[in-house]
Length: 143
Image 1 (tube, helix red, strand yellow):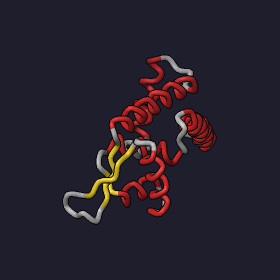
Image 2 (image 1 turned 90 degrees about the vertical axis):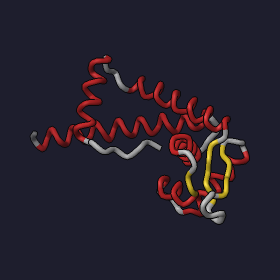
Image 3 (image 1 turned 180 degrees about the vertical axis):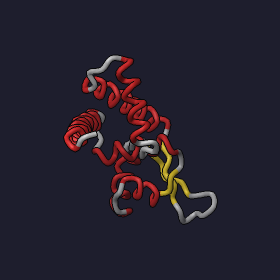
């Protein structure tokens, strides 16, 4: 691979990621969520009970910021704080039934918007997935 090809790959990937991010931000707004709230809700719906500190690490923010994010999600009835069974000082976060439904609907919309960016046939998408798995065999989970 030539340096020019590498540059082109990087440019395309960064451009695609930027457009995906804009779509995610628009989808979060459609659900009346901030981007941080949408990411937190998505992670909690996938991961199950999560301590607040772990969510802060996952969102790459200070634990004090997570408190405000969780407060707003809790007020909407999308998440609950629960005392850990092993240490009652630790609060774990779980999604409510409504939180699971919102998280699922949000992700369906994110995927639908992403499809409009990927002007690929089914075979081309399968090939892209295969190439991405080779290029990044251990991707970070999507928030």
